[in-house]
Amino acid sequence: MCFKTHVYLTNGGNMKPIRKDELEFWSNFTNDEFYEKRKTVDTEISQEAQSIAEKKKPNFAKECGLDKDLKNLEKHYQAYRDFMDNKSLTEQKLKSAWKNACNDFSEKANRLSKVRDWYDIRFNDDEITPEEVKRKLGDACYQEAKSHVRKSHTVHNSLDKIQKRCKMIFIQEHTLTTL
Figure 1: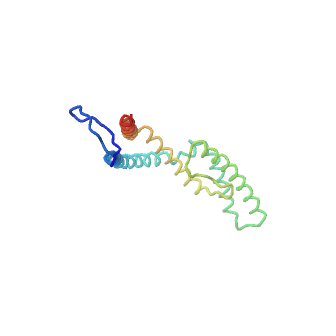
Figure 2: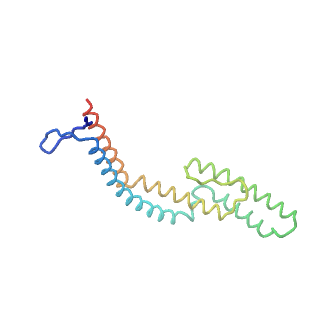
Figure 3: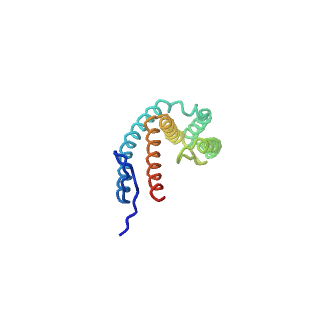
């Protein structure tokens, strides 16, 4: 029976073979250790991102340059709601203005969504309500805050670097033993 082995140095400087199943064990062990730490760090990141998002949420539409469009949308939506029970002609006029505001808003917001990589946040061209917009902008604000926190979180970034180094060591050990 032939075992594929890898070699590593012991404390005494001697070379000791490591079998495939041992290599797999240590690789899994390392991944499990990083998983627990990463889970803790991700929780910390989510909490901090939530805190930042709550603070930024009221002014996020303005920060995105959508405040005027949102006010315009709210104005036309409210006018539509107020006169919905009136004559058919008035209803059609107001609904048309609201749909135009929806189209204008959704075009601009969807472009921003693509540029700013807002995951799963798209606006339909038809009948967008200000409540829906605010909810989606709140989600986008949270996504951006979480991304910002993740980029500047030293433990998260350190974990990524250390895990990459560990994987490189395993690959180098495997390469050395096959030579």
